[in-house]
Every structure is written in C-alpha cells, then in structure tokens.
Image 1 (tube, one colour):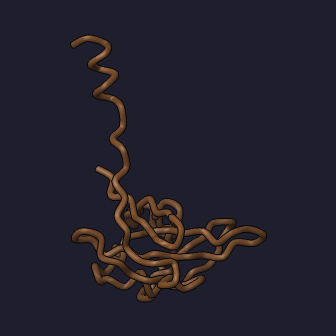
Image 2 (cartoon, one colour):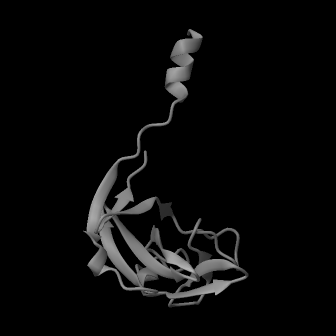
Image 3 (spheres, helix red, strand yellow):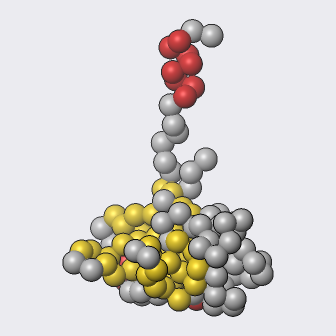
Length: 126
C-alpha cells in the first residue's frame, strides 16, 4: 500500500450530527432525555461560574443497575469536576468523560453535543 493510501485510511471520519431537541427543551442544571438511534441519551445543560452554560450528553442507562435513570440524576461539582450522581445508588460520574469517581470499572458512554442556534445536536460518531 502506498503512503498516500495509508494517509487516507487514517483520516478520521467527519462527525455526523443529529438534531435531538430545541434549546428551550433543556432545563438548566438538570437533565432531559432524548432518543438517539436506539440509545437513550441524557442531556445536561449546566451553569458555569462566569461563563455560558455547558452542554453534556451521557448514556441514560445506569451502569450499576441497567435502569434508564441518569437523566434524573443530581448535577454537582466535586474536586473541580462537573458530575452527575445516579439517582439510585449515588455513584458520581464526570460529565466530561463519563468516568465514575467511586469505581474506575464503571463508565457512562458520552457523546459529542453542541448547540447550533436554538437546536441541540448530538454527534453519532462511528
């Protein structure tokens, strides 16, 4: 294989975005859930100190119980990280990457998410 073909193969695919809701559907410092393909995605619009609110998208499925409840979790901050606490057993997950603070073996899937005008879009990835 030539170097040119190898370079083309290694280029990342363009992100595919799907509109999931309107900005007005979001609740500041709380979660709402959208169906993206076959996945339930919990969207969090979180206030930040001195800046615009941040938008996060994580799996709605609680990794401990398998129940779709993360959109009802409690938003907070711990050690400088924005977190969501499961409403069932209270494990805390970092919104930025889905890692669990109490158990490194647990993780929420995360999605790229953006606000385009008044439309919330979730990246579908590969």
